[in-house]
Image 1 (cartoon, rainbow, N blue to C red):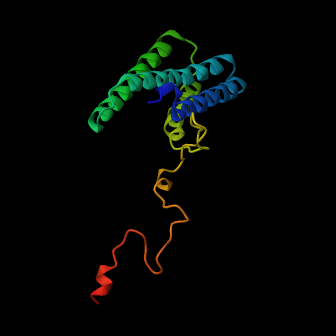
Image 2: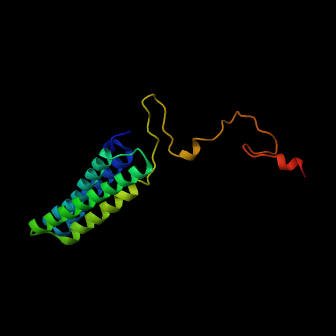
Image 3: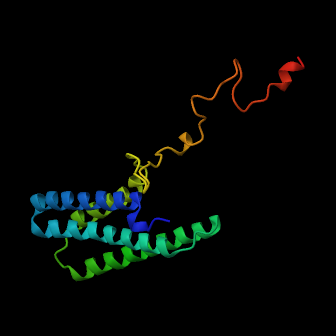
Length: 165
């Protein structure tokens, strides 16, 4: 099993979140000054750190069965939510000059990017033996093109019922 922080979906999510955080902080800085830029950076960092916690909890959990995998994912989500709540509380209680619009804009956008990064499909990654992982699992079970076909018949279907007609 690939360690969670080395998996492509987690790396993609972290990269997208980091880029969005920098972009939103820059826009907030131009829009409302240094405190807005820092607030946006803090909002993005809350999500970035919660994504790292999610990956670590996912990595130490059991995946021997479908039920164990679901429990592990629920624990990882719970840990992520707990980290988000604690960090937002910490930022809102300690940083007196926080710009709420910038903080929550960066936070909400980076949280949404966590979900959409998992939907992104890029080039298949190279394996250790030089091959490629397939990006689309439905292509794995196709028959090779050189396999002879019988005329008027699809592979895997019985035509015994035609003989009785």
